[in-house]
Length: 362
Ligand SMILES: *Cc1c(COP(=O)(O)O)cnc(C)c1O
Image (cartoon, rainbow, N blue to C red; front, side, top):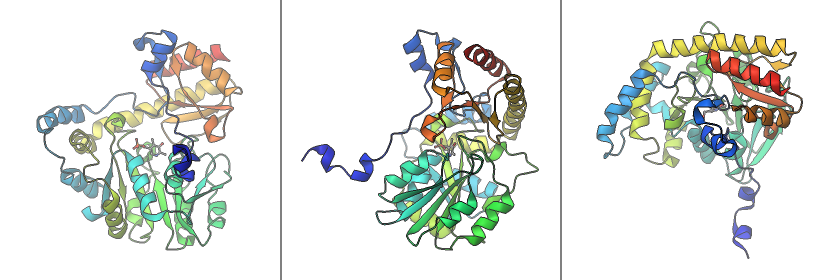
């Protein structure tokens, strides 16, 4: 038997994750200087990282010979979220905690539910356990919670929900999410992935962490990769009942989060000015992009994140023409949306450069 045949069939069935094209890769492929390239493909923060976090990283380099201690960050996250420290699980990016949840609850003979056009890591995390993946049809490109509830089977142990969703930007009103939690059996885990939580208008935002005491089957995931600008350091977290958090910690690698990430995240949580600036830049940039897309007569999905998805027609063709002009966006054919492209909100000049390139590409 070949090694291929010896490998787990459910691992062979996984399609690899397709990341946004790195700037350095496009530079190599097309001979475009790195500084001429605009990358709006991975929902990164165009302002970079918080200056306070940067200082904290520089200081933390001094202790790099030591294994990390997660205590300070767990304490800070718990205080901010209003939960006990025993309810916080840190991850090497929030993708890591998604994986931990899957490993605790999924296995061959069990199933998990996710929505068509939802985040690509849910199929990866589910399929790598050998559990069956149930995909429910989207409603207006977002989650159809009624369809998801109807899809629950006796072997279903977990439901994935991204709010707002990536790559479509759809947002589920909080009362609908809460009604869904009321309707789901208490022994089915609901993962509420809030990677874009901080981009929701503060007066519209509801603190879902406070729901955990009512719903011990709820796991809320958040990340430092987006508004906090720490994507390259890999740091995110889950908030859950102490019972679930304890189980997740049993399968977690003891030192899954590094010293620099811990130091940066503690400082970033405290840098309200940077978060506000990032939020405001995103709000203005969203307006700029949406106005530009309308002017070009392009359909788009109203987004609550730091990106917007629009119908380009020939998604792959338009993407190629953008790349030739040094502009990287995200094709989402892999999400079942081959006519659409997702663009991250950048700085004002980056957004303008994108719109100009898009007009030329069409
Ligand atoms: C970006 C994103 C994440 C964050 O992933 P990290 O591993 O924390 O970088 C999680 N969920 C969704 C839906 C995302 O778009």
